[in-house]
Image (cartoon, rainbow, N blue to C red):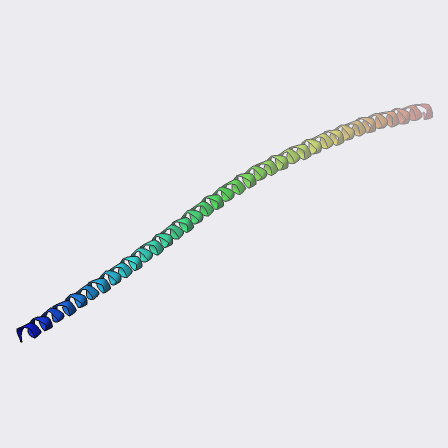
Length: 136
């Protein structure tokens, strides 16, 4: 009986060893699968982080470009506005000068007419005086 018993014990030990080996193999496969899943998750997380950083960088660059365009446009419009103001002032000055010239010309013409009118009155008075002196 001991031989059968020993065989049975040996068979049970072999079965237990095979089961243990099978469980260890299954545990190694599961561990490898978990490690692979963790590595895949880590890789995916890194890709997401890279994408988020690229989007942040693109957004920041877009903001910088927008601010530069706004600054450029503001400066250009400010320069154009200053140029228009200068042109408007130049035109006002030219109009003022033209008005002053016209007023001077009108004043000179009025003075010339007044002088001529005074001379004509004097001539008329002289003619009256001459006619009166002849009549008497």
